[in-house]
Image (cartoon, rainbow, N blue to C red):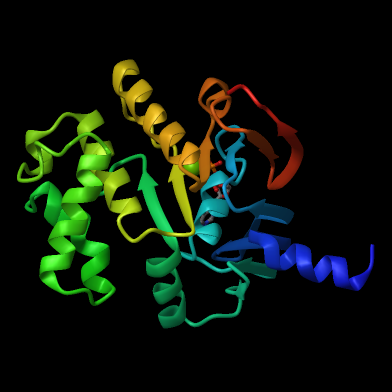
Length: 240
Ligand SMILES: Nc1ncnc2c1ncn2[C@@H]1O[C@H](COP(=O)(O)OP(=O)(O)O)[C@@H](O)[C@H]1O
Ligand SMILES: [Mg+2]
């Protein structure tokens, strides 16, 4: 492969990891949670990263989400080299380019749904009228247009996770990163949230979903298997 081809591939990829390693230190003990991960994700892909507990999924998610940086190796996100950025620069990239969905929802309990959803726009410096409009629009998109004024405690687990998805969407990020998004949901809510991710994928969003459940991973179009800090398989699923 010529140098030119390598360059253009790197540019087309939304996510490009090369030789990523992550070492944790606790006291004098070192643990290598990622041992050389190469990964390339293009715009519009729906990728599931699947692996057992302790395989390095959350470590990988933290790096993909710019919550942490690799110990070694490079990470380009939307063409930008984020592996060498400062905390402040990372926070900025995170807010602009990434929408997060966590297992625990991570909503602020004292704020109405729309207030939770507008938060990333507050950090982005958008005016309040536009923030409100965008938040309501995102909540309507996830089927909660009639719940915008409810606080998280007044919503079911599945509804709370849909608020979290609306919050992840509202900035129109390059990628939506979901770490075990259905891990705390009953089967009905799981179906609803996975259906929502399907819709987002169909409308062209790039989604990276992290899970230890094979039936959840099967919803994606591509499965990356992680084991002991290494990607051991890269399969096209094409279930849908
Ligand atoms: N902050 C940390 N310090 C030390 N070891 C860690 C830390 N975070 C994770 N680990 C270890 O790294 C490995 C991968 O963890 P993690 O990425 O959370 O896996 P998964 O999400 O697949 O369950 C595990 O063995 C875990 O104990
Ligand atoms: Mg995890």
